[in-house]
Image 1: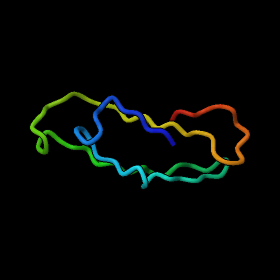
Image 2: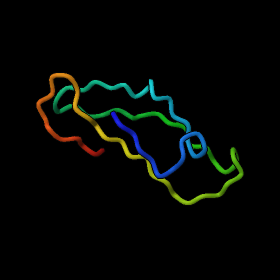
Image 3: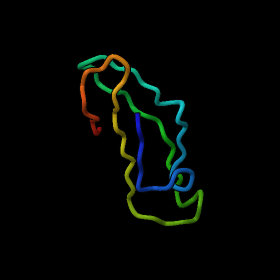
Length: 70
């Protein structure tokens, strides 16, 4: 799994990269991926909306040649 953001890690949210190690079989739905937003109360910076992008990448034994945006 690859995660990319327009927010800044540790300045806009905190995320433990060991948490979302997910394994799913075909036709299964994903669970929530936990992250903690850092609010303006935490860092005194008021910002607009930001996005976290999660991409599911190929795993062992997969025959799908494409990454998939979630």
